[in-house]
Image (tube, rainbow, N blue to C red; front, side, top):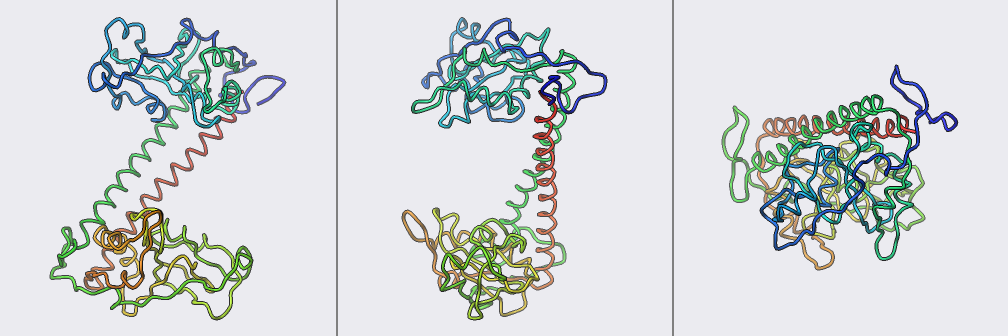
Length: 419
């Protein structure tokens, strides 16, 4: 932004002149209002209700997921939601969350809104509601909303506090051009998110169906050309455990020529990424990690998260395992990629979770993990399964990268396309 000229840093061709600062109260014909009382005894039928939880559904309110409230016709008419209405949250546990906003872009005529929200009805002759919705997400707008909040046990904001917020706007034609650009950007983000979620659900289903269920010897779904029972073996029969870093103090970490795999590396990644490991001072008595080693977490706050596994696929030398994990090294030929996914399959995870013990924190014994029964197909089938999941993960990661890239572009545009 040029402070002197009140113009944005990035602007569409054909537009010129300074943006004009206006208070929000001057952008609406009907002012600001609070919605209906959401009586818990009257939910489940009636009119569609925009609630606080619906404020976080994306670039506009998802009217298909609204709850229902049974209010009389007079109350509904007084609080009927129109296209372009913008809503703000009235309270937040943290100051930075105050006056979070979203816009209704639906033409439905059966929508009302909750009393814990503040509604603004923009004057559509002079103001584009889509532009305003994005304007309210900029740092200049957010900082003013936060300043207007009043903090006691919670931070709250009122209609009058929002009404006096003053923001710069261009004429309506430029507003519409800006709003359309952000809508297209959000549409691309949503497309990649939908594909990402679909592929993630497919992966979850395949982790259940492409490995034998407990007590069975063949999977529900199998690649063409493979048949026969999978071989039953205890995990301890096909590999042996080793310990992580021992005898280290806090002074040994954060520097040194060696690197160590953290608890979070193991928890977050099906296949460890060597670029994530941290530096550490090391001595020759420790167990160096080699390609194909499996890492298991030994403790977590929930039984569902205990005993998560990851396989080291890096070629780097002088890498070691954190002491909050234990290592496992196969002693017979196994496809490493297959093993990575087999250990995250629901049939294996259920057995690990069953072994978790604790109250406030759950732990697992590596001896008991080694007693878990697994089922192994031929090496060729292992390679086929591993390759399938690897390709699936590559597609998921591609969409995640695009989502991250587009969100970064959006944030940059929110900074540079507004005053």
